[in-house]
Length: 337
Image 1 (spheres, rainbow, N blue to C red):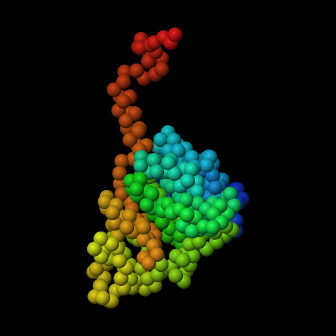
Image 2: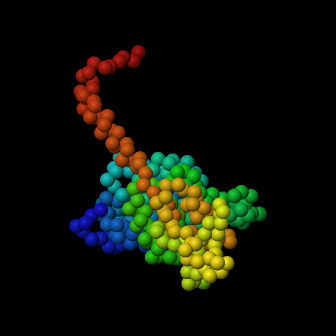
Image 3: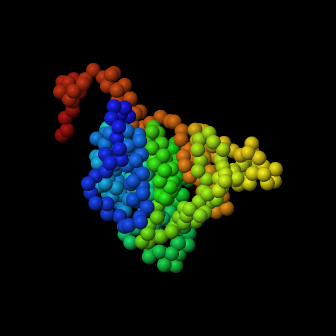
């Protein structure tokens, strides 16, 4: 982090016209990303933004940083190479539910499993927007689209479940309409050492308008979501009059003052707990339970790119040959006939 210079969001903006539909949730994500980068303070010339293919993957054009608009689903592979070759860079992977979880699913889970120090921003609008409205890996069962005119007959991926199942150490979730919390979450993602995944629930105004309305609308958000903060009670509701408790092996939403429940019964969020059992339960809430937002898991673990360079240094220290010429002069050669 740079302590000598202070950056503003404008320092991270390019001069390119932003080519997303008016009202698209990607605009808000870009705005918050600029703010988060300025808050963290890593200079633009020490930042690289990688993407695959899709609406969200146009984002590198709108950054005043290094960038690479790669091919469909391969953003995680390219980002892994960039970070491993240049561990001094702050590397961001910007992707969508289609790009990341369909053709790019294999690269995604292995980047997480390896714990490569990437800041992964997964914009989830539950639709293929760039290719004009086909259902995606996160579309709900029964979803009607151009490629499923009678409704899908398959269950979707849940990004949190996939991330934690791949032994992820950082997962957060945010709304495109909650700019303050989205900015804070992205900044926390940048400060985490290792693979961090932030799922941003974004709206596609053209092909899937209002898909997150049941949790994102201002009128219902307080009752339908819970914003988790490490070390704080898990409270939600318009006046924080509701909270989460453990009922046997399940989470339960209760109202303070009813059925004998008091503030002392409400769980305290521990994002740093190594056992991910409760994190998984929180991440999977929905339907009758509030949707968990904020940083659900944030745990330290060995980082892939650092481990690679440490291993290289150890091997090089034990080798007497330092250059290609020295290696050729050792006599360890062979003929191919």
